[in-house]
Image (cartoon, rainbow, N blue to C red; front, side, top):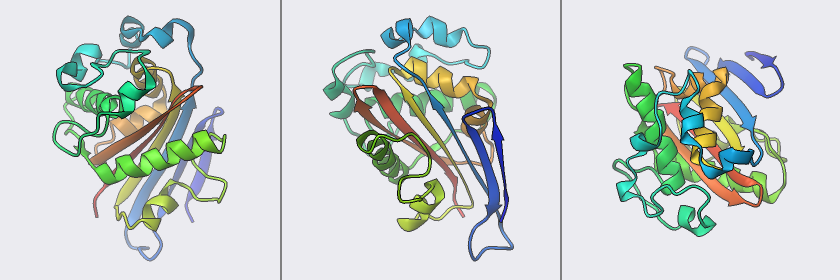
Length: 218
């Protein structure tokens, strides 16, 4: 059945075995962070983001030349959702691609292999982010009682290990530092055993809801 531990107020760790796979232990983790509009952070304060001892990558590492919105913080909501890519060095729309590239930059800086974009995870992440916005909750478990691993299994995504980060932040800079400053989130981003990644982002009046899913294929 696994075990559950709560650290502080927002970090939850779950480890256990997948149903029907008792001989194959499955690492399952999820953590969450919530940020408000953040004052100066809402302007995309990259100097502030890189002042964290846990952050080694910043705006230049996003390589925004191929981003439709050019990663301009505080831009029109439509700028973040109108540009969609399927694969390659991009992974979703501009905001999602920026977080994908920053995660891989942080891994390269530490000598870790890069994550592969999985658009199935982007789509599933967007669904949960939109659900949190539309039904006004902030949790890995939705009002129907489904957690991230339930949602992955419901659409047939098989995995050997899986993790989820969720967040609410106004800018890419705020979101990236928020996850890297949190031990649980950072562990997911830098976990050597996780190989595929997708983050789904939706805009709201409160900021951007983000659901990042990580898996290792069976």
